[in-house]
Length: 377
Ligand SMILES: Cc1ncc(COP(=O)(O)O)c(C=O)c1O
Image (cartoon, rainbow, N blue to C red):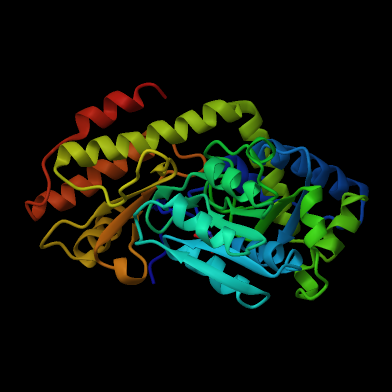
């Protein structure tokens, strides 16, 4: 196979890497029980706290986002029943993880449609002691109302577990203020480093639900114990810590507010372009939910296949975008703007997508509005 070095990854994770992050990983190994590693870890933990909006502990696990989800759910599973919201693939996954550890009530909504708080409340009222949901549902590109969901859960004194895998670091997350007890992020998303690390932020309340019947590797009590020495219980993915440290320095330099604003402008530009091009956005948020600020899902135009669009885009331009998942395969395409993506990459992506779709008479030329929005960056 021909090697490609100039590709552009515009999927909702893993993301195109900042040059500084690539360089940060290219260095000699260090021991994970030494002072240098502890200093790196301390910087990473403090930086992640900012992204989560918490003053509580943050545990870093070597594993993908799902390892973080399973660690969170399994470690805090001493409860009778958990309500899991499913309005997309990752909500569905939460329910499937939770069902291994406790009784689950899955509250389902059509993918791409908003959650109905009344239905969630009924489930909580029927005796759930926890609520788990996805903040930014990547499969449908919709932002669920985290603050309102947490408030509702607290009315029933329920533990709140939030999958923030594709929101933390790219959108506003105020864990402590919103009343979220446990939140999870994955490294290859808005933080902008390669896949392989998950971070779990945990408040004191969550420990009331601690259960030893969790997988050994994912037992958060072991991570808590080792955090006192700024270490991890088992050998971590050290090069990813080098990357994480650099990513958090980049975030500090950019400023979290500016970073969130950049993500918002980039996704707004995609939506504006799609609207003007005559394409239809997939999710249908209500007044409480919103379009995702880190990924955009667009309905595949009539007469265009996934291969026509994504295959040509990759073959001719070296740009990768995502398709739909599960029953949305072939029905939507998704453009990610997570991490350190700038206007240059976004304009190139939209122009290339437009070029391919125009060959099928499937869209109008419409870059003007997107370019105007991106001038702010
Ligand atoms: C919202 C959400 N949750 C969970 C996951 C699973 O993360 P991972 O693939 O890193 O295990 C993803 C991955 O795309 C995601 O977007």
